Image 1 (tube, rainbow, N blue to C red):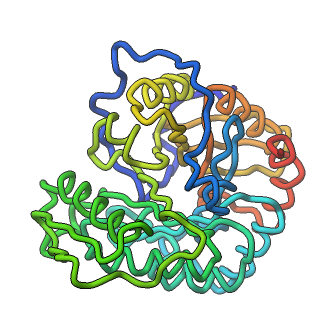
Image 2: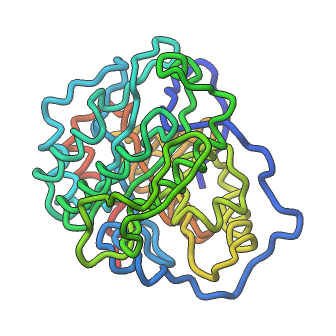
Length: 358
């Protein structure tokens, strides 16, 4: 297990997909269920989702720009495509793209710095098998129709490898630029989610939808493209999004959070199970900043429940303990790692990924 402690002298970066709402965390009557975990039939047919979320398994994805960039908020992305190919060859399950509209000096990170959907289109041509996901598109700062159109297009162009991750955005400074209200983002998030789900449901042709914050669909027009061989698009909640656990346990196909205390992982998985009503598996994952040290035997240390520092063998041991508690996916941000990316990938492929392979 990793040693958990805080060190305020370390320059621990923040992750742009994250919110801070920890309210209503644990249901007082939450308990283990004996239901066998299984994906919904329509999602088990989606190659991207099924690659990332496997009952009883732990998989790993990389957050763009994939390599480390510890000394700058704006990374150099000249080798983004080559990095994606290396990650795919090594056996990572997914590549995740962030949606950061502006550079906020107080926040100090722009993710890959490129438009997420343009980036996804580029990566679709560079990597042929790995799942591609958004972590996450800020639902309230974009029109849901445009998100649905872009997501369906990305899924078609990747042969059903795209996973739509939506977030509510955690930077209040961005909302005035879009003339949006930060205070009502929870309600807007739910409505945007519902509209996107309606538009990407393959059984709903010429769909109807009437919301409060967004437009109205009267059934006279239809969304294209359609997604051959797929019932619906996988949709994942990124961050808490100011939603309650009942919503996360039933509406989101999966949930990726952050800042989770190691001892709480099992509790969260139990809460999701307890509040679930469709008797299907809704996987839980979380994000880690990772500083991968040269010495594979260096002990693992966890800072602020999100920043992991150590050697690959100790990190593998730590993540195995989390897998046993029900963790399904880790989105890794190598931002604080100073080693060349090819070394990092090789170390990970030799000392971490084989321990979690099927």
